[in-house]
Image 1 (tube, one colour):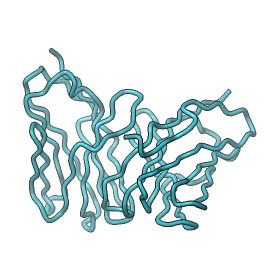
Image 2 (cartoon, chains in turn red, purple):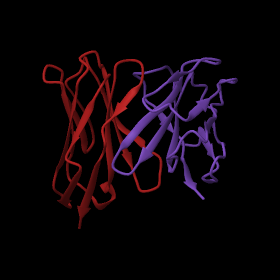
Image 3 (cartoon, chains in turn brown, yellow):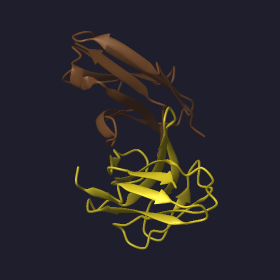
Image 4 (cartoon, chains in turn cyan, brown):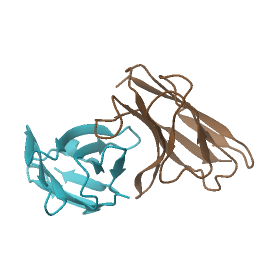
Length: 110
Length: 113
């Protein structure tokens, strides 16, 4: 089955800096890659997603890149703010179910 | 996102007891999912259902059971066979199975008495 690896597990940045989270996947048939943000004790919320026919997608301060050949995708957050502090999960789907990475705990310090 | 309602928010289980977690959605989604979340483990798939009266095991189905008698409802039973049930349980739904955005409920935190 699909195996999704996510790095780093924790990330601390200063407000205004950029943050990058990377994920790799094993199943070359995977074609959908969402990113979720989860604040403590709350539900995961979709922040951005990308499909395999696209190499990059941007939404304001958030961008995701996908390299299908290397089977990795990344989340980029620019101009980070304290409210970006949360756990971020990547996931990959081959059309049957989402397989999640173990999460990255992002801390943005003022 | 008020489209998916999980209840209760907190649940306590005694030894040898089965407990049922409720999940209801009013998004008219075909597919529904149950995940278990443990610290540092991400989300692991327990069961999923594509349509009414059909469901499939996920990666960690042992000790759990589900039913899908109605499109809007997908309850999860944690049986006494699940020896380590303490976790945060999340229900999700999507328009179609697999490569579609999943919308999550607020979760149920289950603990052992």
